[in-house]
Amino acid sequence: MNQSKKRVRSVSLETFVFLAITLGIFGYIASKMGVGIMFSVIMKTAHDLLLQTVFLIMALAVLAGALSALLSEFGVIALINKLLSMFIRPLYGLPGASIIGAIATYLSDNPAIIAFAKDKEFQKFFKRHEVPALCNLGTAFGMGLIVTTFMVALGPDYILPALLGNVGAIVGSIVSVRLMLAYTKKYYAAQERLEDAEEESVVVKDFREIREGNLFQRILDAMLEGGKNGVEMGMSIIPGVLIICTFVMLLTFGPSVDPVTGEPVYLGVAYEGVALLPAIGEKLMFILNPLFGFTNAQAIAVPVTSLGAVGAAMSLIPQFITENVVTPNDIAVFAAMGMCWSGYLSTHVGMMDALGVRQLSSKAILAHTVGGIVAGMVAHFLYVLLV
Image (cartoon, rainbow, N blue to C red):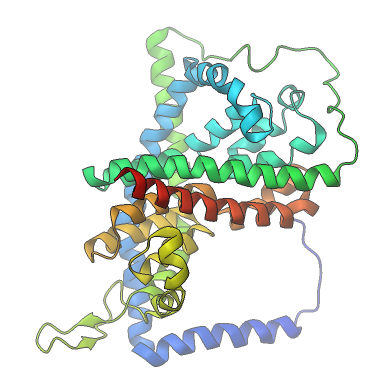
């Protein structure tokens, strides 16, 4: 989405502030491991993430995209909408049609709900103050199928935690949407329905479009088009994974261990770091342990990374499992918070802008922050009760 830009002075105060912060961060890292080793670690970590993680997520995205296209083509999504619509209004305070947008984002990514929200036929189900809350609803389920599939693929011990994470994300989404609706009701004094479309047309929930051709052609076209969307999604997460995840890993992991002396040493290999986030996490363990059940301070890196890109957050998990940093309880919390937050700091403003309510972005972000925290707490307590 193209964002409007404004003209400012070529050199201003923010130039020097930016330089000070950047030099401070990388100066701190270089002081711990050396400049040459720092760049070596950055390059090798990014390269390994690309080969070992991004392509795995892309493969999952292709399969999930094909599945979502098939479910849509043959009316399964429409059936789910009819079955669940009676529960949506009392839970979310939104019309039943909104479940279509939630399912769409679960099968793809956050912005998928915008295509529905901009549709005149879809809008007719909503009151004016309910439309902005679609941003929070969609974001709470963004990349849900990818996150769940990724967690399940980690091993049989993580199937139940992944499912509990889904439950946590649902509860978090309810909290987020309800808080957002409380804000939007105050913002919109009038609560009349949006204007109907000028021309009459079929209601979206009663009819669906299908591809042309016989049954085999429709199945093949749906799978290939859905898979293509999965490739595009996989490509789109590369910047987030390589940039955000590499930086977070630099701040999360510590030095390697010398195989001869057993002492910590920097070798310039992938996944070395300065262990800053664990140090901060140790100070917060009195909060993180009772709320989320974290037993290792490094686990804080996953929800923090989910704020910017859930794909990058997922990239952290295999390494954490290898190093015995996380437990099945943590996986449940990661699934809940990763799905509920799903990089909302990088998408919320653009999505609210697309809905024409950019002025409510701060309210949407605040409501969704609370929703994500609640999602993680619910997943943790469910795991404690059921396992």
